[in-house]
Amino acid sequence: MKLGLSVVLVALAALGEAQGPQKCTSLRVRRNAASLSAQDWQSISTMLQRMDQDGWLSRFGASHDRLFSRVHGNTCFFPFHRRYVLEFENIARNYDPNFVVPYWDATQSFREPANDPMLTSGILGTNGQQGDNCVTNGIQANMQFTYPNAHCLRRIYNQGTTIGAWYAPEIISSYLQADTTLAKFREDIEYSIHGAVHLGMGGEMNSGYAAQDFSFMIHHANLDRLWWDWQNTHGSFLTYDGPGPGNSPASLTDIIPEDGSVPMGGSSVESVMVLGYGNVCYTYDTSRSPPETYPAGANNAAPSPNAQSAQQQARPEGTSLAAAAADPILSGSSNPQSRALESSRLQNSLGADIMNRFFPGLGSSLFSRKRRSYKEEKPAAPEAPVAAADCDSPQPIPFPPRLNPDWIHMHGFDPERVEMFHKNACDLVELLNNSTYISPY
Image 1: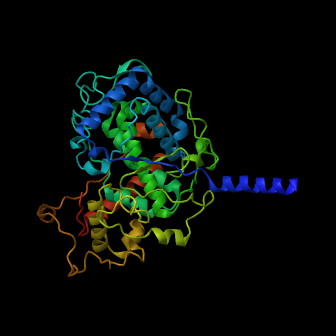
Image 2: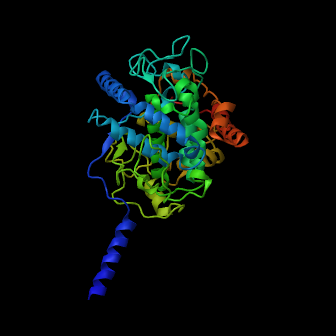
Image 3: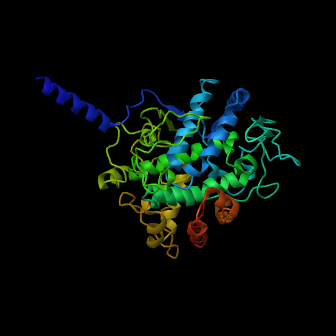
């Protein structure tokens, strides 16, 4: 009898482990930074001032710098930064219990980043002043740090008084749809929008201790949002492939690297893979809700056809977060109206070969709208209304920027591989600009 009871207890324990982390009882919602009010930003400024006085911002900068080589250039890039930004959020809530890290969708102003509403004197601040490059306005105006030495928050736009174009939403949309492994998605994101924003802003953001600039946190919250959208779109909640920390084969049992400056409790990679479970109790305002039950699956497992099919449905405009639980996110944009236009225009402007290469999600059988080559006649049924300026003066999509040699060296990237990924993005832009596609962005 005792033996039988022991077997049952062991079986129940094993079942508990198989089910993974417990579901969160409540969720914080990370909002688009562009939707925050002036009062919200004032509260964040006060919180950051207090955190800086207690040394937390310098500690986050030091931690990121010391771990740099272990959390870039491998698949741990995503789980590390998910855990890292979450730790920042948790500590910040000791100063402001209402604080939730917003995300900065840098694709919304990709054409002229320096004109992004975030880079104004009332929010993140503008370019650093002449001479010392110190940021003298915004929520971190005149802030001082102690790591790696005493200095101000610096910002140096990569084109002097302005910032070169970043990555278009359509490029990120292609990554979300076409990348079937996390290793490939990581490279696409790390070589593109991740580096473009860091290098465009320069100064603090162009260093290993970039986390001292609050821009870092909201930029990486956006990359985390994109990863979550990719996980949902492919049904790949527990996919963690490619190289892990130290370039050993990635495993869900990997311990996320940490430094004594910001202890993170020895979290495993699996503990942060699924939003809404364990201690990862947040979601994003325009993303899918966490799954009702913890996903079944094994490391490196590909999504089943049924899992993919369940997610290939178009999201109606204005759908609530809860109602969108079964919808895929097929666009790099966080704007529901713009990404709906993007999807319909891509389907109506590109041939099947281009769609299958760059936008396979829009070629799903559940997206039954007939595609056409841009050489064919337009369909009789009109698409959603378009502003006259869009039709009369379509703006070509600018080619994405290259990562500079110093950035590539700092990260230990393979220059030839980076160039290959950049060429693929340029190929897409050229195809779009040579078609009848008109970007809604």
